[in-house]
Length: 265
Image (cartoon, rainbow, N blue to C red; front, top):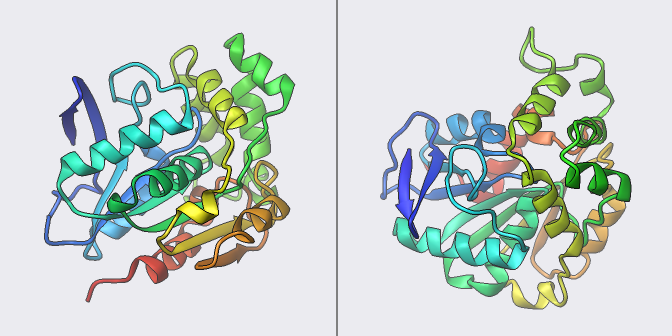
């Protein structure tokens, strides 16, 4: 699905189902250097269970055109405008990694467009190792390699893909390698320079946070520090799962997503 918005083409995945304005809308936002395809299992799952499921390519990512947005604040403002243009009312906003920061900032700055947040791989601060940031700035293949190595739990490193015959790490690395020059650095720098401030006092909608016990990028300790500031928050744990949880444990993620967003019957 393509949409013209602010002079650019914005691409979505909808799980093979047309958007139905009568169904509860769920909008999914990808992480650094990635695109809508990381949500391929979730869009299909939700689209066939009574939701208008949409996974968006941010500007300059995947099949969306336009210039890259250089800060989390800019991404949040852009996303809020996009949600309003879809005319679906407040959405259930689902974010992964950088997408969590965008979702939080969207809810803080534009509370009218968010009904609930579901965050995966979340932390209030996402510092980036200098070696990774430097490799990304130089557009070196080392950047996708490091991100892929750190992003997966133990099972994913030893062919523990829920989809038989596929190697999860190689698929993730190939996705990152497809990103245009400058995309990974832009996103990592945006994450590393983001300051949440009093985000807990600004977000008014309920939040569900899902954390993997083997997440090296946003480890459980960092996630716990994030949720401590919120009054209406649910924290769910995935044992033996890393940062790429929607790929590593799709069935568990589907169950955990359905509880907070409310299954339509």
